[in-house]
Length: 315
Image 1 (cartoon, rainbow, N blue to C red):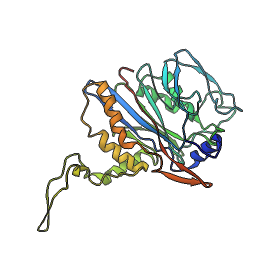
Image 2: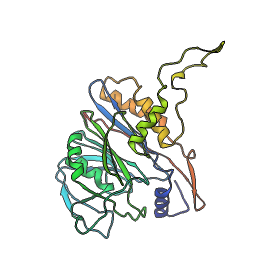
Image 3: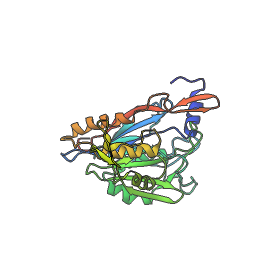
Image 4: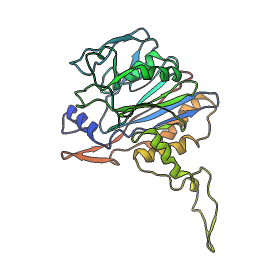
């Protein structure tokens, strides 16, 4: 997308705009046992993603996004492949050779990490580097759960956005175990992803509570109803999900994705589930223009940049 602003200014403004990063994540499970996590990536500019491959045995330097910092290093245990952002060597969405999936989702205004200090700099891992680290070091969700409380996760200043990267994280392994990880002013919280969905703000437990407002939704069509002495007839198909929110806000997308991800007919194989996941996420494609915001007389429009699906069984 062309802009009168230079690229750095576009990135800065987009990270500060509350409307951007309308990402939606789901998990499907095929009858052959395959867990298939999938997601959309939304920005108001081209995020300059490429496929990043990190072989096992690679030495990784940490805190690389801040050129004024020198961090520690680690060696990858597992090979990793995924999508990066801003042409940087960071995995924001990917899978490792053991079938562990990781996705970073925007969590603006709520994410809060430790401060970088001389004492913790060597062991610190920055919020945008966490995907590469987790995928390269662990094979299962249980391993990640055990390790997370002992990690020092910090917010590194990134010149392209004039801020740290505010994320929460979705992690799924090939057994189907799945969690959402949030680090806020209240500390580290790890939620079991019981509804197979993640979006953005507010916190994951808020979204679960909000589902109570839609307890009457069902995939089954509604039949005729008698109101007083009047017979009310449905106009056609889809009456079971009548009232499902259709806007692009994070709470609405969470409800809509929960309805679709948990009512879709199960796929026989992993390949079928991958196709179904892409098809389902078509519901969440955002065209340029349907989300708009003006910043300093510049019009920004959030849109779907790419969609990814991971086969955790066949990797």
